[in-house]
Length: 129
Image 1 (cartoon, rainbow, N blue to C red):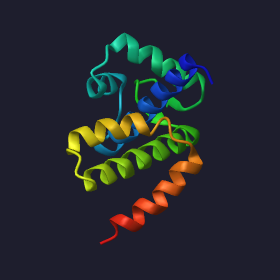
Image 2: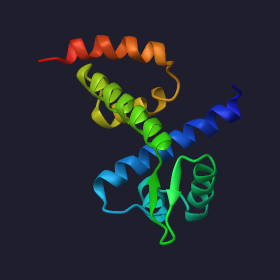
Image 3: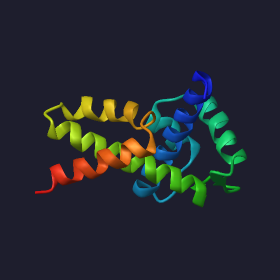
Image 4: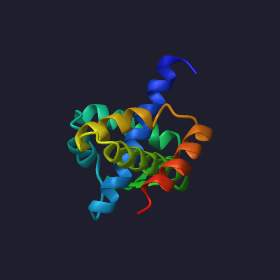
């Protein structure tokens, strides 16, 4: 996968994760909510939502409410789980929580599924009380 395609997939994952997080916090998610959460321009988010819809990761109602499809939810939940696990691990290692969250966001997109599962098993055994 080339650099541009990788960055595109990373952005897609960030949008899906954000929609998932917002859907747990809000009764309904709109593009403006995503734009505000990510501090992105409305036109940028609009283009991203069109791409997510074209790839069948979201649906958008006639009122502009965004919902994750099963495929979109699956990706979002995997990214969100990875983000939280890596953040918790870094905080456990003594990293400032804000830095840990930022670093986890970078790491969650680049780790292979095999390495993530191995790390997850190890981290969970270390973090158990």
